[in-house]
Amino acid sequence: QVQLVESGGGLVQPGGSLRLSCAASASLFSIYTMGWYRQAPGKQRELVATITGGGSTNYADSVKGRFTISRDNAKKLAYLEMNSLKLEDTAVYYCNANSPLVPGPEYGYWGQGTQVTVSS
Image (cartoon, rainbow, N blue to C red):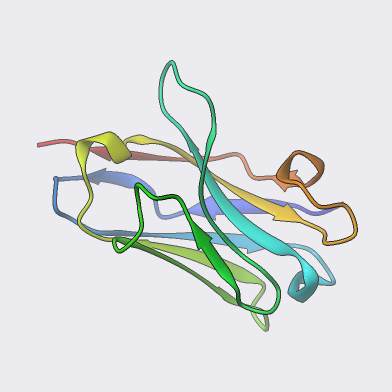
């Protein structure tokens, strides 16, 4: 069982920045693909970014060039640096840990989510 705890959400103006963190309890954290997903009101949960244990990253087109995903395996932390935030980035952001043995976020573990609100 892997427990994930997100932090760092909040209210920010358009053009501002936030950094989300995800603390994991996994004993083999370094092998997990870590991902950030978000869900806006009335919409389905969508991929924001993922990073493999080896450091390969993948981003949704909507956040490329603005968001950066990273991880610290020694501290068992994953991060999402969000810059140039837009109104449409408003959502609950979820951390996901997915084992490479059973690929697919739906088979992984989820955090409780952290709210990001972009508003003037």
